[in-house]
Structures are given as structure tokens and as C-alpha cells.
View 1 (cartoon, one colour):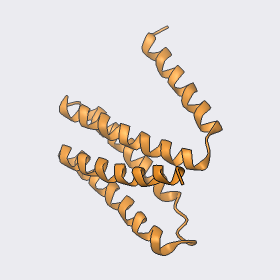
View 2 (cartoon, one colour; view 1 turned 90 degrees about the horizontal axis):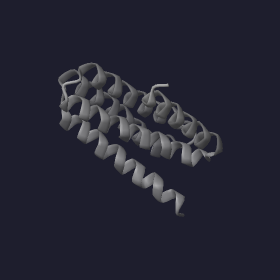
View 3 (cartoon, one colour; view 1 turned 90 degrees about the vertical axis):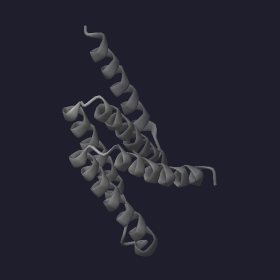
View 4 (cartoon, helix red, strand yellow; view 1 turned 120 degrees about the horizontal axis):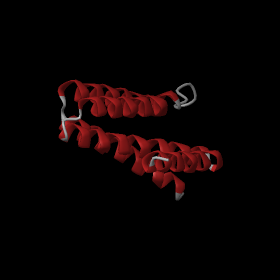
Length: 127
């Protein structure tokens, strides 16, 4: 068996085990971590001039941010969550621009924004 394939299978099983036992709060944390990881990987692909890899990783990051956005319950807290919804839309737009223009600064911007949101989310767990 290919060692890289075995490693990916092991990681997939580990992620599945974590998600099956995770609280909703932890699942959101995991999504944010995954988004930050994909953005960092996309930046590395960009530096290596790996265009297909960059596109795939940015697409995954857009999907993750979109998933975070879809998880917002705008009907219950439209005022406060509306701003977060707009921020997620902005992040997805900047990720798309980063892909089109191979702009690492746009990736850094989104990473910083998502990291700030994640820091706030992480702080909720300690309350």
C-alpha cells in the first residue's frame, strides 16, 4: 500500500472520529481550523507555482467559509449575525480574487480575518 494513501486514510478516520464526538461549538472550531489550514496550503501552492493545487485549496477554503456562513441563524439574531454574514461574504470574495490574481496578500488578509473570528469563537468556550 502507498504510504501517503495510508496516511490520508488514517487522517480521514481520525477526523471522522473527532466529528462524531464533537459538540456543535467544536465543529465550528474545526471548520475554522480547516479553513485556515487550506488558506496556508494554498499560499504554499501559490509560492510553488502549483496552479491546480492553489485552485483546489482555495476552492476548499471558500467552501468552508460558505459552510460557516450557512450555519448562521440570521432569523434569530439578524443584527449581530448580519455583520458576520457580510464578513464571510467578503472573505469568499477575497479568496476568489486571490485565486484569480495569485495574490498571497489577499490570502493573508482572509487568514487574519478568519483567525480573529476563530479567536473570538475560541474565547466563548472558556466562558
